[in-house]
Length: 50
Image (cartoon, rainbow, N blue to C red; front, side):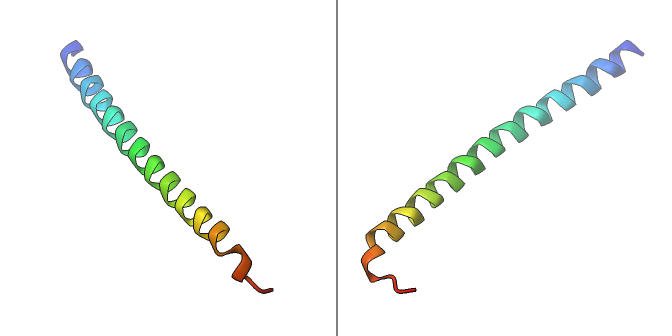
């Protein structure tokens, strides 16, 4: 019975590591996109008319 618990904990741990890495990559990608779009807005600030 104890062996089954360790196998379950191992698979959950591996899943958490993979999800953590994916979330870090997604967060970094979103940050880069936000920075580039903000820079584009600042560059074209003089052409914006409301």
